Image 1 (cartoon, helix red, strand yellow):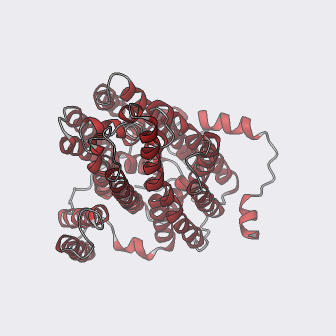
Image 2: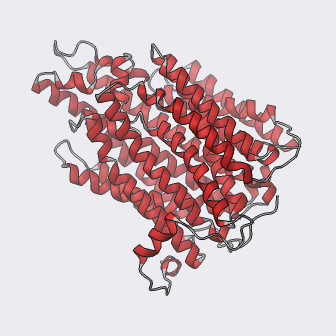
Image 3: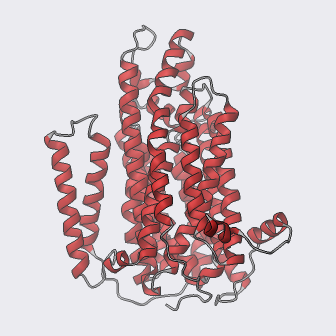
Length: 527
């Protein structure tokens, strides 16, 4: 405990609010950067535009999901609207990270933006749930690439010791998008229709491509010939896809001992083994295996994976719970998430300034994991009669924990690797974290939808003819006794899951104690 206290104590007595406000709006140019203040501001602005678009796409369906499932009659496949985006993004992350190392990040960044726009068009035209899921997968390929490239671009031009405030600035955009996404999705679902959550991406995406093309000209150019690790990409994609299918189907659509489940597990093992063999022999591996010999890569990456399982596996379905169990509208359920994102924004900015002032970072992720574990335990104690202030309080603590950990873990990873492995390491970290997002979303979604479907099928009332088409609007039209039964079904299907995932955050906090306190670099890496 003494070590944690030392990590947070400093002698500076300046006014904290003034300092945070001035630095997050206009961070001073790092002494070790090769770019001017104006160039850094333009570059950061270009990255923010891309991040805003990608993060809006990831969160905009959170509050609209029950309405979409009702319109397209797909409650049973509801989980795939989110999982498809995350799965595709998971696969894209190491690929785009490595391509950025080889070919320069500007071209890859622009390509990722274009792919995201294409997926929005496909999803906007969707006549049924499978078509929508396909569009979301295409969106995910672009969105996953953008996240990795943004973090790697920041590391290209800003030294590690002074990088945290810039990561916090981008993290603030993440928090803003995470707030706007559910609110926008709920507002559209209540009004002109959820498809506009996709169509709005087309003009925004085209504008982002134009802005990014102009503002990212200051990035270093790497003339290295591109030698794509095709075998690594193929085997990694197959491994992740098989694992997600197991997490989604096993125990619900297929038994754990069924030929389908066992076949998928065998496929994941075989493809994973082939991936390791390919990476050990190829000249330009997608994920250099030497990364896994570095403690300050392995521990933060595993901690990020574990946190993602808990965080995204629960938060993705919280708006559904607030609508169907607490009776909120899609817009109101999105507004409830403001408390979560407020915590993320405050903690991200505060943690960044603390790291810049002191150079100490180990204690922040540990406290972050502990806070998220406590928040999950609190959420698991909710009842149908719990008031919204109680929900908001636990969500605020949840966000504070996330803000203390997520960006700092990226900084630890980037500070531990060679400059020529920066993109691969950033992509590898985000890949493992997104594996956690994918598995968490799939596992929690599978448990939630399986329990929910079973409970809804037991409801005996003439008013509920098709449980797969049950939406918030349909719930409001039911007789009051039937509403109570349906709301209880949603509550009993989701809330207990929060308590099941809390212990893994405790394990993550314990693992982070073993991170080595490597001094943060004060100069930008040479290409």
